[in-house]
Length: 359
View 1 (cartoon, one colour):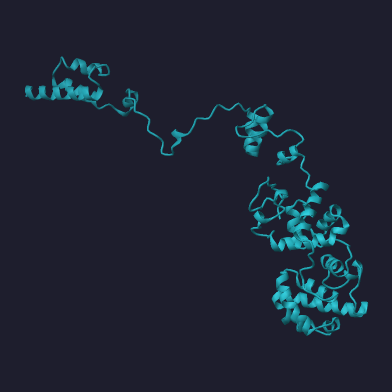
View 2 (cartoon, rainbow, N blue to C red):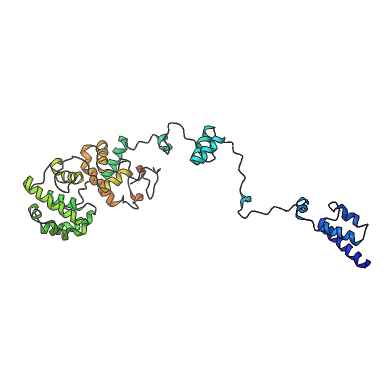
């Protein structure tokens, strides 16, 4: 019996050393004294101290466990520098977003890294290089250079629509809306052979004309415009197309573009500048205008282009759009105007491109 108690005591002492440490610093006093008193009662006291209650375990010293990496990877992030913003600025940032931080930091004389401070008086997004160079797209020297190059490229061009009379030009121009000149020129020869005079068109009903012009698109509206214009010319102008802008604008389907085409191409009267899709696109690319409304574009061009050039300039720009300056993928590498054109959608450029010069 005494031998069994001795073996049990030695086993308990070894377990206590493994659990608390061999130096004996953290071993309770009752256990140390129990080594001298090897009685079963001391073993009972030892077992009580080996298995402490929860309250005692909270007071027990714990070992230092190495900190494990966070699953979110937060330990890999760069620590942020202490914020110098005041409480008011932090509230303003929370309410208005990052822009408030930028304004607050700039007021203290510092900006976040990568941000450039814009001098006072300069508009946001202004092209600094253009201002520094004194670039003026409407300078008379530049306008004269554009006209000179167009004269060399298209010296004797005329209207791209096939016609043999003023009335035929009115019809062809009405049909060209939302269509191509090539498609209109494919339709009009047979159309004018079938209806050779303005009186022949005036005698038609719009439904009779629709099959002949269906391929030009919007054929229902166009048939009403052509028949209505023919009846107006016969009834009010004796079958002759009028020679002035005011009377032309009274014809159904005729707006300033059609009137300018008829007056300029047939009667050689420069009342304005023809503004179609090609003129709009190229004028904006060349920075001759920043407007998108055809009437405003016409007014801009009339101010910078000499009156004697209005008719030819429109024909040259239209042919330039048909040959080189396409709406998509223009042939900039072959364009004689390339080195004075700063369009943002150029496919090839030797000069700086301006983001506002878009078609």
